[in-house]
Amino acid sequence: MAKTSLKLEAYNAIRKRIMDCTYAPGTILNEDALTEEFNVSRTPIRDAISRLEQEGIVIILPKKGVMVSELSISQLNSIFEIRILFEPYALERYGSSMDESKLFAFYEAFNNDMQLTAFQRYELDDEFHNFIMSAIPNTYMHRTYDLIQVQNIRYRVLTGNLLGNCYEVGHQEHLEILSHCLKKNWSEAAKAMEQHLLRSKNSSFDIILEKSLL
Image 1 (cartoon, one colour):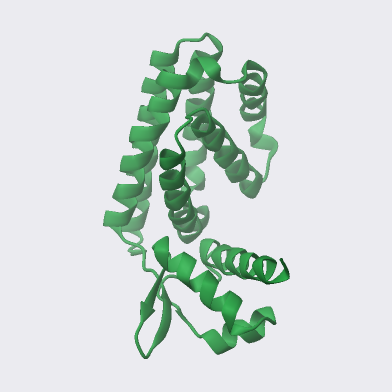
Image 2: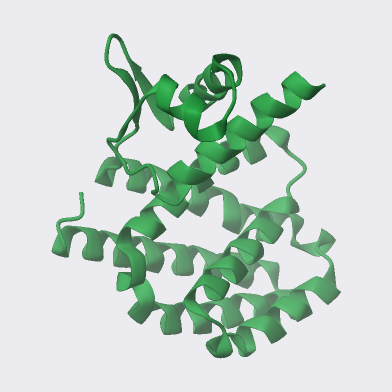
């Protein structure tokens, strides 16, 4: 039990550092350094690295070590392709099963989100989109979504506050989506979600290309 716990702790810790870009894209990770940093043996570290490799977050380089996977425009396009397929579908197909009180709570939260810090806004955004996805009773879709969320957060950290100017537009889009949900107009909610994600994608592309971040 203790060994399993150590493996999970090592996995979560390394994964978090990759997500928040403490270990930036392209960084070479050394097993010895990781065992020292987390004060564990090689077994939990190797187990964590194996899991992260399967998720496409790290790449094992023979005789060099472990590299945190790079980010690319192609990858960002793939992330949004999946989101645009999944999230509108969740609303249109499973919206009627969503907890109305939670939808109303999100509406209230977004209506007052200008008082939140940037970090709190991003947390609220993640919570909302994850809630929408949670309505889908398909574990395979959830596994895929979980994988792209790691990369999605890395892009967000990479662009930092550069997306801040886009937040006000997103704020209105969230309220529009939720307004349709509360009226139980799931088809319009799905369309509004698709437009929201397309706009987010285009904004992200513009910033990354303009600032030459990748």
